Length: 184
Length: 184
DNA sequence: GTCTATAACCAGATAGAC
DNA sequence: GTCTATCTGGTTATAGAC
Image 1: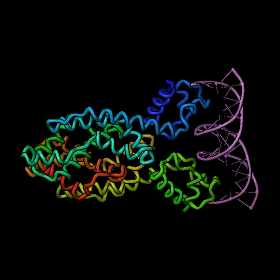
Image 2: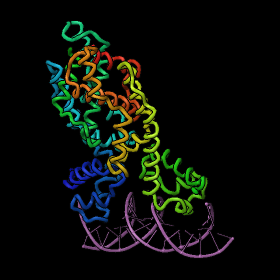
Image 3: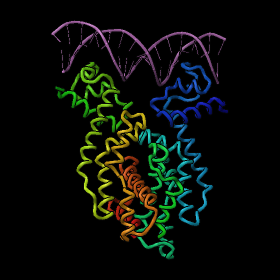
Image 4: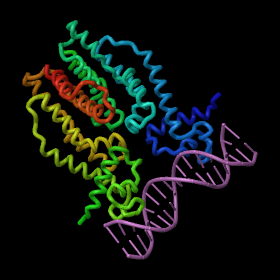
């Protein structure tokens, strides 16, 4: 059975990888943060390498995102749907932060993309198409609109969370404006 | 007067910082790429430190972005305006790539934000307001709409250029859909 | 499982000859 | 301005005692 130290190392690695970037974090830092003697190789009783702990951190975050995903229910109106998409992105913040920082060099990159797309800000074109056919919202290119909306939500999230957002428009106002674009 | 080696180092630094990240690039790599003997300290005849060359690279890119900025003319219709905004982002791709990778740790970060906002995908709320008042486009919250549009453009650019975009909707279709949202 | 100690390596940066 | 040579410090990873 795995010891508790392993979890403390994982927690420290996640926090520091996200905030400082993988390259800037030394194994020594993780040992210190996990209550081990810094500079001792005690880390290596739990992980084979720094790369190995990164893979474990990513795998755990993917698992968390997948678990969360099953508890998502479809929204009635556009505004609620977009708010939930933003919430989903925030829930996956650590994963997104690592993806932004490390790029495609991350381990398990394909599953990361998949879980972000599935459980994240996926705006369903078919859903839009149905609403258009029903006459609830104006007729436009459903795939194009779905992409534009999805990108707007992702862009807002990134600006707000990562790029020191000088946006000046708060979440609620943003979501309302976006829904008004699609709905009228 | 600066020698030509300095420029070769700057060019190499920009290319490698963008593609591999600052931390992954060794001074030795820059010397090799500039035609100097790798491992010799010849780099240090041109820059005081790695941090110093990063600052110089950033300053040069800011200058380029500012120079380009003065050649921007206002667009007549929404579709043209959004296409130009995407083009502006592509022109500033190296700066954006470094910002995405290195985050707020970049030197001259405030001027970077400013030049990105000024010359980039700035969607002017006042311009939207004027079109709404003139009855050219439907009445909505101008600031909210400007933010939603701007974030959509930025998000599309990031997805396309940096996150191995599995979007499936090309630029023209995206721009058209976005303009249709705002315009009708 | 954790420690002390250390090996092996690599990166940033400097000295001094040419 | 570039070279060879080197210093210094930090990082990954291992060995072996407890």
